[in-house]
Picture 1 (cartoon, rainbow, N blue to C red):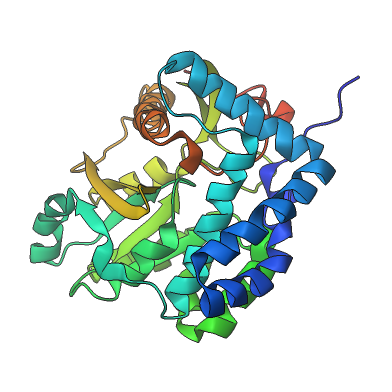
Picture 2 (cartoon, rainbow, N blue to C red; picture 1 turned 120 degrees about the vertical axis):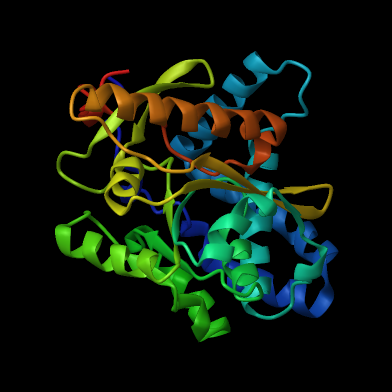
Length: 314
């Protein structure tokens, strides 16, 4: 029998970050090349001792190759090397050692109507690229204030590392395990003040009975949360998508308008939520095919036994 699958929050996906403080010191003192030279032996040991994580990466990369035969898809080691590079960049960002002027912004003009009107919005991100980059950039753009919803239980050690580098790295984080009426009211107040609430669209909520929809993603159905769209309908605000990726040694940040406003019908509500999740999954897939090594969900994304009966049909 196969080993039982676990919820993503039970997997310490940043476990190998314990050694990243040393690696960060190497990069800061000696530069990026010495960091990369030391990185591969560390990753080799990590992957050798983490078969589930290794198999999850291999499965994802196999699915990408099947849909994009000509794409430059890395191997498992290269996939984790990209993840480690992203972690290093997060540390460099909050340590004040990263040149944010080199970041290319795409679609930022789509945010202008909301910013000009002082209108808050929901920003749906993913575990694609480097979200920390967007948090730092927001501090440098007048009128763009972010509140990032996170479940930090699985990454507390890494958040402590960032806090040591810069205490301000924790200022706009809000830990949310379950969306309660009190949390929704707090977020409504922030959106009312013109702030942007950031929530991940590719992680199933940490709850006993999470609300999800099945959507086709890289050739097979997968569970996606519907919470972001329920929240957007409550807040009655625009919904944007955010994708960040590192290509050719430089970062790109892409913004897209997803819905100018979102109202869920009383009848056919589940079908409407499923359609929204499917639309999001299609856009996430498009970016995964463009930069395959930049999606960092190292668990069995396509099979979660506790979600075999979804709340919203697809």
